[in-house]
Length: 123
Image (cartoon, rainbow, N blue to C red):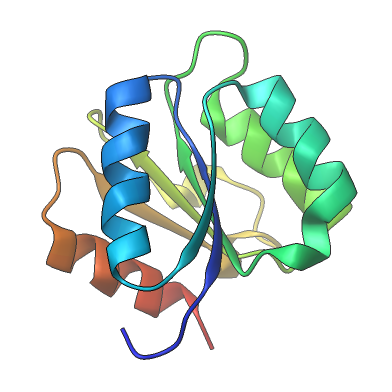
């Protein structure tokens, strides 16, 4: 990917989060990695204009990723969000207004699949 992005990565599984951070950093992106949904939402409230994209795990114990994404859209309605899970997910279950800003990538995924999913969400 040519352009450097500022990415917020949220996943409760620390090893996966660190692997994601490592890969994205190698791609020259700036990554803020947070392993708790509420902490991520609080961070986003303060820094919503400082990121270009969020990557959110759907299955987190304290708040499902879908709920976190919807909360983030109330703060910044145009934030591109890539949801990720080992389970199937249909973006069509989300409100129509946010669907254009949401992508889904099933786990496990290859780095090139992550790159393609990120690119597909950006203008």
